[in-house]
View 1: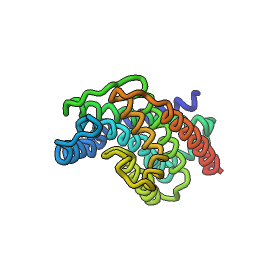
View 2: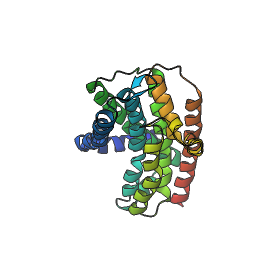
View 3: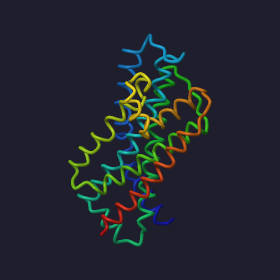
Length: 244
């Protein structure tokens, strides 16, 4: 566990040095989405008996926790190709499992911070949600999935440019198609089949359901946990291969 703490604390210290810049970057897109979609387009729209803002804020929490946890891929990529920090980790007595776990916990930390910022934006906009244990568990599981994907992605790409391209193919489509801005049931049936299998869709369902006082279904939580464990194992394998 000492190896895990070394990796995690290093990343936290780096985050601390640029905390204000990181917070501002986390706020830009959500604030624009709330203004453009929440007030500009959805001001007079109701979905399932809730105002559009009540529908939107949980979706933004799911989306922001996804993007913030996945963003560790770029940090790992830079430290691997430019700073050679990854090589130092591999030469140290830190196990690969501890390395992956430390990076995943960093992603989860970023996701929780991103979620708290959306909650604050929601409160300013007059949206009050139910912040139960199920709500936070859904965020953590969502971050677990995409942090693990991020570690895997950072290990398989060959350059920083490839990392950006991969992000455009993985994160950007899910951000808009995972039930963030509109109900998935409004899409054609064939699209629903595909989108309902995405982890962000499970996360959005769990976060929105728990935050709007719906009856909590255990299914999305199980799906996120299994997906997260699967990608964690894949990420660990990718780190082993990258080390070789």
